[in-house]
Length: 273
Image (cartoon, rainbow, N blue to C red; front, side, top):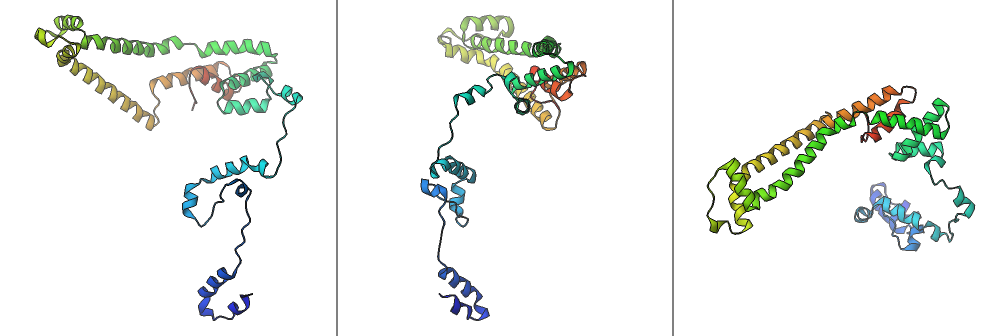
């Protein structure tokens, strides 16, 4: 109704024309599906509301309430449909196995290699599983020697952790250790009546080695992290990568990517570069 006289305003009052048009234009808002379920729509002009509600969460709420908004229910599966659902990996399709293996499913990785063996060697499923056992043996070759430093380190850490308690707080153990390795002056009997007093006395010689060992391990940990930051693989990862490469070279008839992924799972390597 007011558009006619607004257009007669001079050109210099353009800003006034726009503001009057906004006032004269009817405010019509089409409600969204979520509005019927108490989900407020996101306004493009309201920064506070946009920061308070994430767009992805808003869409999830809309999709969750879509079927109820249109008054429909999802079609429930029948017994025949449930019977067709694969329950084991060997029942799944090739496409699904490939997708799961790429996603990191270890059982799907094994199933993918099994089917690769079936295709290349023209074997049935059971014969391919027997061939997979030979690949497993190749993956575990040298495992004992490669794991020896880590097992020795774990055993040393356990022994040191358990031994540190009596060496600090047990009187007889502290006296024995002091006599054989420290030879410092023994505190008076009145100062060794409780385990805390024993710890206070033994700490005079226990503090330097414990502090130095802790600092030494901290520096090693920092050095390892900096190696990782610049792309240098630690010793353990390099040995596992070498084992994977040996397995791939031992079975050149199969696709290298499939064998590499399977061997990486077997040796405990997340990904091989």
